[in-house]
Image (cartoon, rainbow over all chains, first blue to last red; front, side, top):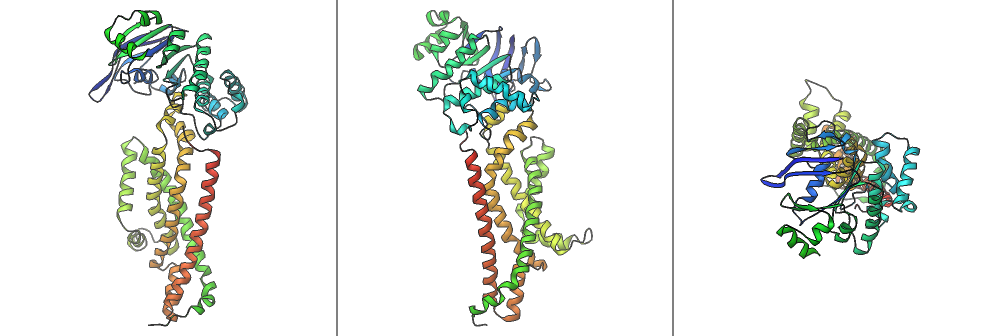
Length: 240
Length: 222
């Protein structure tokens, strides 16, 4: 489904992604953990080419893409992204946010798009807020709308960049619930998160990153109960 | 020397009206031209292409680094062997070119002030850079630009008085001419001041209303 090959990314003289190789199968949920600065968010952003990697390729459905590929925006349509700070468009209503990509990128009519938008907002339980502006809803609700906006494009894979880190603790649950539902429905997902409970319950595979490298990967049981790497052990002892 | 006699103010007040109208014309044309220049050069300023960025930088450097009065005289007196501009178009054009540089900077600031997550969200949906600009960034930047823009419009209104230097028949010129013929400079300049205050107050009133209305539809980002 998605295959990352020899990905490298530098910020100046600092190597943030160090020769990462990663394959994610259709329907698989991969959770990426690691200390801040370990490169996990950068990895996600490189997969979407929000950051241009220095080298390496990414294949989506067998189609190989690199930073030099022309028309990267066509590739990004296949990849849904959910941000830590939601990044909803404040000058559009909730529904406006969800259908923006459909009308502007896929060229659908407003009616067609609204029909899909309605379904998506139902999915994240936000349909009743369709006509309000983002400033009127809570952080958790914003994030659910952001998920609906990404889903509306019918992406092949969804990337979540610390989707609950900016939320008040009592709002985290609703967002995680939506994500669990998605996973259950068979969506291919890569999730950067600190929510260890979510990782244990939903992840097919957990990846531990340190200094831009994948240090250890395995099923939740492997990682939690029997970590091999010293760094992983240390990280888990701090976070669990 | 003259003795102040404020009782003559009402007698002369209405004679300023056509000249106030001229001030309005110079200002409105100046602002419209300025918006055109400002929009184009503002977009060039945020471009990552040097071929667009540097000419805009150069224009802003020249305009902000020299006095408006000089720019006005240059356009009206300096370029006579290339184009002969009438007084009014020369004044309006000079005011427009001048304000264009400031408006370009205002728009650049407003565009760059939009949270970069907005751009990323648009791009992640598969939008092209141009579409992100048009649908996501500019509508938000425009709202941010309203307060500094209205401020700039008020400055433009007051700067239109410099057109008197090339004898455009506007408020200040009329005040000075009446002053010299009646020896009541103080009174005539006061009348001009009252006209300017009325016009800037009206402008401020509408600017505030627009700001308030924009705040209703949307408030905070994030």
